[in-house]
Image (cartoon, rainbow, N blue to C red; front, side, top):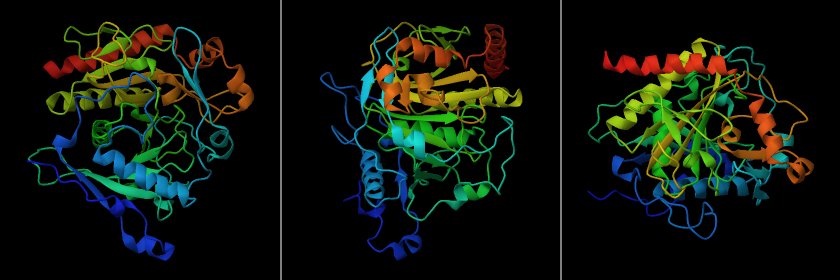
Length: 385
């Protein structure tokens, strides 16, 4: 059956009169499983692929047009122009990017003391976002044959964007959920990556202590028109069935989960990742999650081999608050190899060695990583019981 496409993107745009924004309601972006793009998404050979270049999916068109309009209307803290970007010389392939405005104007992080901290309605939270900041609700077709719960996810602009199309994926804000990963939200994040026809649309999660700036459940999603080392890095299986791997050849050891596309395999990955993050949260271990199209686990693959979804989980030292004076702070995108740098001086002088030092300062001791590895493998083994 053919998937219905909007005749235009007008339904996701705000009306001209600001007084009408609140009464307009939030449009729904309803999608079917056949819109989840598995094959044919590749990096172009010649140059990085800008979000508005090349073939766009219905999801890309809706997100980019609505996001661009909000930028033109001044709903962000700053205008995001073309960001200076270059790959650091060296063996890793770090992508450094100068974003002075985000470093200066983003909201100060909330006072966080624990990975398991309860939601505090008195703190700033997503129930207080302004009319117009919500682009649409992301929702699977309720009439599609599926036993899975239907979850409404709000796609909201990040008013301090780190790149083009930077959005937040939120469950119903009124629920007051703390920043702890849940299966329905992770499913929406993975399916958002599959809804995009752009190879550089990524999704991620920062736990409390992993540089989440707000204790209200959310994922980040954004376009980066550059390949990252995590897409094709080799990995070693940690269990006989290869359900969880350890990334190799990168500065930060990360647990790799992989799915070739929608279906039972994707649901298994969602379950494994959320059980792993539950374990980490219960043991007060900060963590970050990064979702990208990438190669199957195993030997090193060229970045062009984007055959499925890579979900990478890093356990790391807790860090509460932003460290001033450093070139960048280490969260989900930095661990994946994307380094948003705060000042022109640091951007011009940043080397691979300096980046490695900042990132490795966040690593757990090897003995603790081994203990976590043993625990996660045991969790995966429980699937057989």
